[in-house]
Length: 599
Ligand code: GLU
Image (cartoon, rainbow, N blue to C red; front, side, top):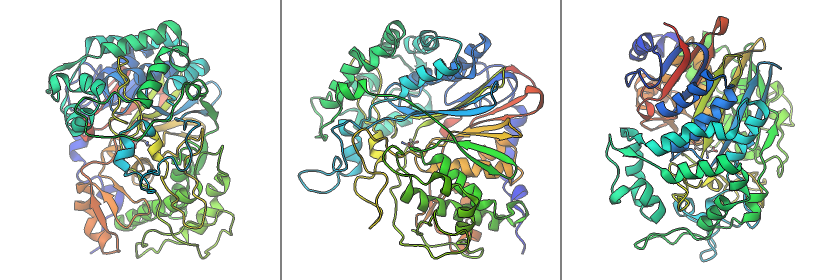
C-alpha cells in the first residue's frame, strides 16, 4: 500500500486545531476564552508569549507606539513574574531583530558567562574525582552563570527602542504587585519542583506559600520582584551589575539560603562581584542559510541553534521532500538532524574560545557531504560520526563517533512585530524549569543553572571538546530564535524552548511550513519528533500513532515524551497582515494577540 504524501497526511489529527484556528480570532489576550488564546490575526503588530499577562503587556506597548524591541522587553520582564521558572532577571537569552528600516537582521547575545574562578574541572567533585551527578550540579550556586538578561534588555532598547527601560518595566511591576492567577500548568510545574524549592528558604517562601503548592485559581504575588524592578527603573541597570541587587545575587550564589531542614549539600558557587561588573552582551551577526528561496536567519555561537538548524536544512535541500512519500520525508527529516547534531557536538562552542568552522558547516559543499550519509531506506545507528567541514563535498568516509551531551530542559520563546514591520524573535531562559532553585533573598527572582549546559567532562574522544567550561566562557546553547525572510521581507518568526529539542522543533516547524504544505498554526500544533544523534528518537504519542510503525520498519527506534517544545511564531501575509500563533495544547496553551484584530 502506498503511503500518503506528508502534506495531507500530517494534517490528519490537526482537524481539531484547524477548528480552533477558524474560530480563534479575538480582540485581546485578556478577553479571549482559554483555548482560543493561542491564535490571533490582524494588523498593527503582534505578540506571542507563554502567558496572557505578558502578551497583553507587549500589546499595550505597541498600542502606545512602541517598537517590537520595546514591547519584547515589556513581555520578557512580565514573564519574569508570570513565568518565573523559565524567565527573568536571573537568566540569559538570545535576541534576534529584523529592522524594517535597514532590512537587516541583527542579534544580541545575552548568554550567561562563567565566573573567572571556573574552569574545565569545576564540575568534577574533588571528593570522588568524578563529575558531579547532573541534578546535584543543577541545584547549586556552582551552576549559576552571570545573568545577561537585564543587559540584553538595555542593549535592545538602546539599539531599537523608543522608550526607556523604566517605562518598559512598569507593566511587570503592576503584575508583580497585583499577582497572577495560578493555572494548572504553573501548579504542576511547582509541584514537580516542590521538593527542590523546599531546600531554599527564600524559594519556599515565594513559591510554596504556607509550605504548600499554590492551588489553581489562587493569586501569586511577588512584591519583592516589584521592588527589584522599581530599583532598576530608578537607578538603571547599574543597580544590578554594580549595585546592591548584584551583591545580593553573589551572596545567594556563594552562600545559598538553605532551609533549616534542607537535605542537600550543594557544591560551592564561584561568582564574584567582579564577574558581575564585567558582564557584557555581544552584538553578533546572525547565521544565514538559504532554503528553497527563503533566507533563514538564526543565532550564531555560542548557540548551536542557527548552525544546526541551517545545516540540517541545507542537507534536506538536497532532496525534494514535498514530492516524497510521507514516511520517506519524515525519515529524511530525522536523519538530517541526526547528522547535524554529530557536527554540533564536535565543532560548536563559544567562539571566543573555540575556532568554530561556521562558514564551512553552513556551506552547500558540506551539506552534500552529509546528505550522502543518508540511506533512503534505513535509519543510521547513532552515534553517527561528525563530518569533516574542511573535506570534499562528495561522499567521504567519516571519522570516529562520539556521543554528545544532551540536556533536556525548559525555557520560553516570544515573538513580537510592530506597525513598522520590525520583528523580534527572542528565546530566554534560566535553563532547567526553576533554574538552580535559588531565589535571591528579598529580590523575588530565581537564579539560572545555565553552566550545566557545559559538558562536565570531555565527550569527543581524542578530539577536543568545544563545550568545556573556561573562565568567562559562555556555555553552548541550543536556543534557536529564527527569522525567515522572503525576497528581503519578513515571512516567519519562530522559536521554542526545550533544551536540545529546541533545534529539532524549529527545524520541524520550518519543514512543516515550507515543505509539507501546512499553514503556521498546523505547523506548530503538529506532533513532534526529535532525533539528536541518539539511539532513540524522542517523539510525542500522536507522532508515533501516525508514523511510528512505518518509521520503525526503516530501523528508527523511539522513546516517548508527552510534549516537546512550546513554540511561538508569527507569519507575515500581504499588506501588513500578521498571523500570531502560540500553542493550542502544550503548556496548557499559550497566548497570542494582535493590535488590530480581523477575522
Ligand atoms: N539552557 C538551554 C539552552 O541554552 C535552554 C533552556 C531550555 O532547555 O529550554 O540550550
